[in-house]
Length: 256
Image 1 (tube, rainbow, N blue to C red):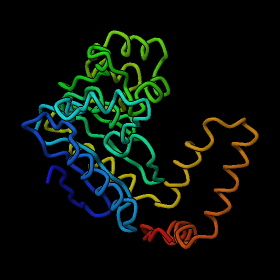
Image 2: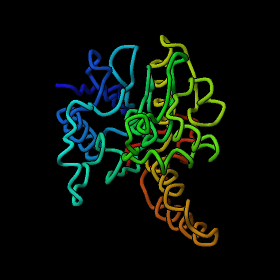
Image 3: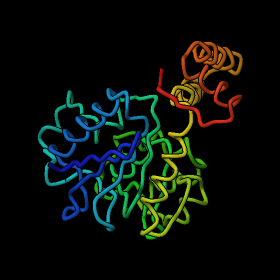
């Protein structure tokens, strides 16, 4: 199978396992990602996911161009399936972390952009290269790129189709952290475990508040925040947290 999963407590690592093909996404891999992320969403014991690629050369080089059907794409009614599944028509309140272990090009970068937090190895290159082949990023690249970095940098990446280094990606806010290749997964796991030590329902509410409040007028966004906060107060974890603080012990959260 081109997708591997491994659990570390409440953290699930999802690995694209096509290193020989630079972890390019073919139909089987796309179906595997759908299965893996659907299972993650449905698993009450899985609180955070890390997406990465096998080996140290590529996170994902994007779509496997050998599988593209020009005749199908010429059909005016053709609608491409969601690239890598998580780039469209998928949402979870659970945090997603991308551990970018090498090149993230085209759809590969779009997969990373669909995650909430991005870490990159210092040798990684990131780019939306579709314009080279007279294609448009169709997995959210044109929309998500400028929401996490200056528009001028985003448009330059899109129209030049030139990748940028991990260091440059960090400078413009595209990635949160840059590490050595050897430190990438340990750092990603440490970050995920730090998040998992917090109340999982509070973490999900915070992500939801950001996602749903982003396009709202401030007054409406503040009302959303209050609704989410009120709902959280009635949970078992919201009772356990203050109680553990008062008793000077580590809280035992259950996502209930």
